[in-house]
Structures are given as structure tokens and as C-alpha cells.
Length: 288
Image 1: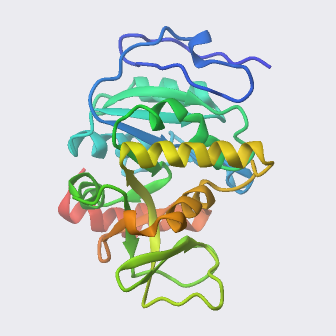
Image 2: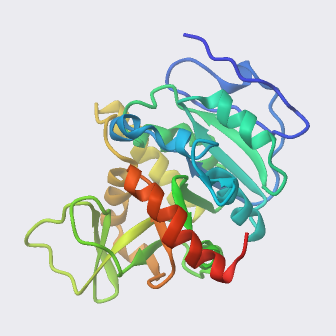
């Protein structure tokens, strides 16, 4: 198995990463520094996403929203929010994603983690960012296939909550949304399908963006590794996050972003809504 990445050291910073298959990204790049705040941007993955067209691919030129790719918008918002360094986990069409990011001007410094098992669960993508999760810095973990109002990210950047989820109470019920259940101000579950006897007083959808303190980020990384070691590599990364959350719920909090427009793009109908209703609402406050 071989992978070819075009190299552009003037515009792309890189870092060595664990891949789980004996391949190191520095086999193709000279590692360089990635200064400032550190974030992890998950670019999709998992069997369902692969069947739907792959989250990573949707973030490129295949998904143009108002003349810009979804990934370009994502990185621009991060930059404008004060995030100066982003590490992106890639797998499917990795070289194309790297080439696309190299053409963008308004973005943080970008480092790369490679997940060769991108057809399996997204828990492997999160674990592929082991170096970042164990860096000793606060970490933002973000799905890349989301179009969102910049105020949503700013809420996460500015929050005083060290380990923070984002909750939206205005969502359509069903099995698809990843839900956050809250009782007496404490998150008590985080999953698509809640147990029938789960007691809560507030239910919202997760935006798919998180902030973790350094110690918590390392704990999450160790949980991802456990999933792989115990044959749970097809699990979504939300399951690893859920386990850590439920083991110490008092150390987590959430910000309520209800009323702000956003959409996760999983299906063709999401593309239409993103380019119409959602983008129009965002541009009402942030033209471009």
C-alpha cells in the first residue's frame, strides 16, 4: 500500500502521526512546527460516510457553497476566530485535500494526520490525531462536514468551560441526530438513540464541535486506543466521547447555541438546504 502526497513546504506545515498501519506521514513530508492554538478537524470517515460520498470529499471543490468550498469556509472561520493552528485528519483522497488547502489564503497553519483505515469507524480518525490530543494544549475537536454560523465557533473558543459540548435545542427528532441529554444542568447522555428509561429535562442535538482541556484530551485519546485494541474499530468517535463523559460528568459542561444556523451535511438533501436556507441565514450576519 502506498500513498503519494504532493509537497508544498511554504504553505503546509506537517507533523508525524501514528497511523495504525506502519505508515508515517513524515515518510512524505519534512515535519515542521505548528505554533499557537491547536485544534483537530475531523474530515469525515466511517462506513456510512463512505457510502454517502465521504465527508472529506464533500469538504472540497465537490461541495461549493456560495463560490467557496466547505473546507475553505471552515478554515476561514477558524482563522477569524483566533485559531492559529489546525491539525486535519485525512484518509480518502488525502492528497487532493492537501492540495486544496495549499491554495487557500485565509486559514490557520495546517498539520496533517493520516488515517489509512478511513472506511472504518471515525473513532480511528480521532485516534490518528494522537500527537495533538497528547500535546498538552487545549484542543478543539470538530467535524469538517458542517456549515455553521461563525458565532457558534466563537462560543466554543470563548467559553470558560474547560470541557465543553455545543447543544442545539431546535432540532428535528429522529435517529440521525446525535443527541445530548441534560438533567439539572448536567449532561447525562450523548448518543443518537437514548435508552427508553433515560431521565432528562433538556434534549438537544450536538453540533459536532467540542473543546477539551489537555488532561481530558489525553483521556479521550486513550479511550479511542482502547476501542481499537478491543475490536471496536467500527465505532463512531462519539461513542468514545460518550464513555469519557459518563465516567466523570461533573467535569463537562455545554454551551447552548440554539437559534444559530448550522447544518451537518450527510445526504444530498442537506447540500440543498446548506446552499439555500443555512447559507442565506449566515450571510445575513457575515457576508461572504
